[in-house]
Length: 409
Length: 142
Image (cartoon, rainbow over all chains, first blue to last red; front, side, top):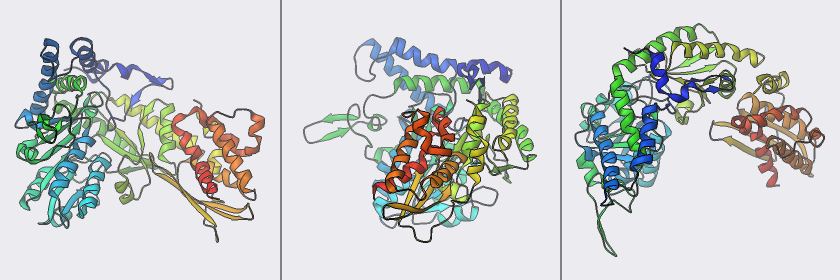
């Protein structure tokens, strides 16, 4: 088995320095670095295979079509969707979730209906539902948290009712890093006749996902958080739901036949893929899935757990470090550590870490309602991936120890 | 980038200085400044009479740079005419944008010149100018 330091070399950017220090990249919750194989797949597409897919009757276009459709099949198998036509390519999870909200939500939600989401949602799985609720006169309800950061079991039981039409929940919170019981929530949603939308942005990169096993009606994620290029995202939807939905965007490539006053739309998946798509991104996504499957999620999970077990006890020893989402009573913590340095604003913390070459996120993490709920204006977040090492943790913690001194505290 | 040139003792002290952090009894203008990318927000309160800023204060949360910048700004504008305050805002924003670099021209900014080095940190520029932009929009209505 290759050591972590060996596959570090697969990621050219990780050899860079930041502010004159070796780069310690701990912002994987925001986006991940790309392996050479993904970069090559992108370059290979644009350097050798670029043409508009689905259109030209010439060999190059056929090749581009094959690359694009192969990415769909690879993605389908990757998350165990029943059919390739249930995989819609978008630009990111945000667009996937908006597609569901605007197409399914606006069509199926009526005045007085209820949409249930959790307080731990990223804005991308929150604002679209707020928009639908406002447009249709529906009620937006929240599942809040237990004292250990997990979703309130009581809220899951009580807030999802006969009035609920849509339940939208993230599989892993991008702030707390806790895995939510989506299979159980899906069961509850289905028992009242609601559909469930799962945001997989923070789960798909780190664990094996099976959309059929969890019985998700819709499942969304971004490619760039799992080693792929930015600008390629995925929406999985059950065929019978997607078939009944109106298109989200209309125009080229999503039609069957257009006359002056009428359009017949194409079948799935083309119905939801208007205009020229991100074929280079799809080629990159295929290479990323190859990389991850070769690596195995078992290995990824064990690396991230080891880093977590290495970092947490050290952080707990520092009296000025406050941790969020790190006291779960379940065995469901992923490699995301959200923290604050007492008396120091997170942006000052991240600036100080930056000068030591350590990249962490600071701010509200696109989860302002959760921040408000946690009574924090902002926090810092370190998030791990398969290429992070104990040495990265050492650099991060050493830099943290300097923060209060720099701030003259 | 040199941390000591950013987090100077003056800025660290000013960031924790609460002398200007309170509500006014009778503000004539209240203006909110907000940094959507980080969620920081300040509310600026001004008591303006006869074209003069009789009193000023702020409330809100933010990083050391934005808090220090706000505190120093209030020290500077208190007792000054609205026109002078507008001029100072122009000067400060110009300094951070590196449009005004002449030290002599910047002298009027007094202690706030300590934030000049922020212009070397693109990620933090918005923290330094938050309060000044808030002031600028508050005075525009006047």
